[in-house]
Length: 457
Image (cartoon, rainbow, N blue to C red; front, side, top):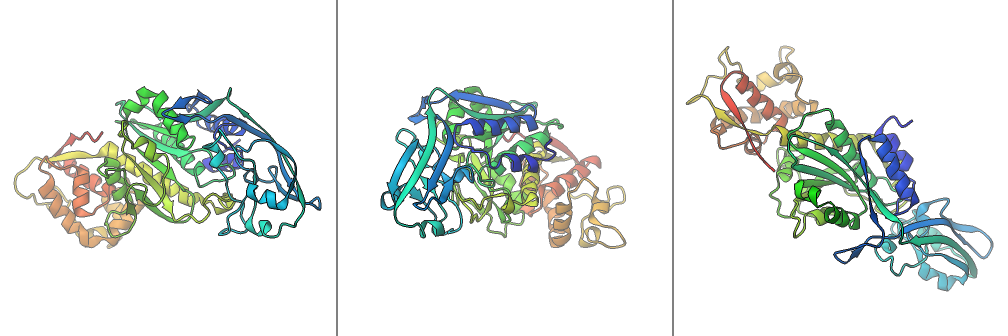
């Protein structure tokens, strides 16, 4: 029995998750089993959509390369990456010089097996071949090599994908996307899918204003098919985020949607760079590109950014494995994404019920902010002063940014004029949304403001 989402990732990481095939489908089945309510989606292989052709169903039973001395050089049984994904069958003897054109290596990662994926997008005329660590490639001996690849390309099969919906009061949706393919790799693709599903899973016990969906895609072509074949869903999706490289120990960054005017762009900026003094916000696809380009495209116009960790040194290699996966890193990314959801759900427009400036230090109000109120003095911590609903992260931030507290209080009193939302106030005052929202809710409790719902989607 799988107890955690980490167990799920570890179990299906080494499945042969090609664009369409038996182990890809089996991996999706494991996701559905772990997340009850997730939905399997299937489209016929070979169907053409906007000049894209859905991939055939590829299965490969055997893929072996043996040198002239009978030594096994590469085997699919040892690693799914050893054979070109979507390689056609080939059996026979071949001289080393002719074999070299069928070998793929990465000289920058000489000990690693690289991922050859081009056939998945060129399946009309696929090439057979093997992937080798470059140091093995350089030491191949002259002579005849034995090749045995037994595979099958079936256009009568189906391409499988999975999504997971959390319904809200509104049909307007936010979608979190990851690509599920990339065999024997964890952070590139798989971790983003499971992070997205975990976000939805944690939202399921909440009442939400908006609806939220996770989608585990076949990279690019799967998203093309999804938007085309599910027009009702596409119409409801108002914004989204691609989640990527979630489990590596690198900096969290965010790439904006194409026009960088999306509410999610603003929310992620608040969550990962409240003060605005870190280089963590980048333009659309500035570092890497994934399925966000399909959603954020002409005709669909679904603004979609990318939330990821960067840089990524193990791209498309066997080093993208569970040894280079951090449970803490992916958990932080999930929690930050849930904070973004909190902004979408809770942002509102505060309207003052007073004129002028109220005395916040009055005993009846007691909401005056100063460094001595927020720092640890007289055994009063930030949590004790401001309530246990504040996150540890928010408390640590405001304890370290006490110079902003008076500024926040002063600006807030001026901006609660019915024209600005809580997020607007956060951007002006460089405060985390969790703290600002909590504080404005305290003003509401004291009767100083009324809160008006804001529609962001």
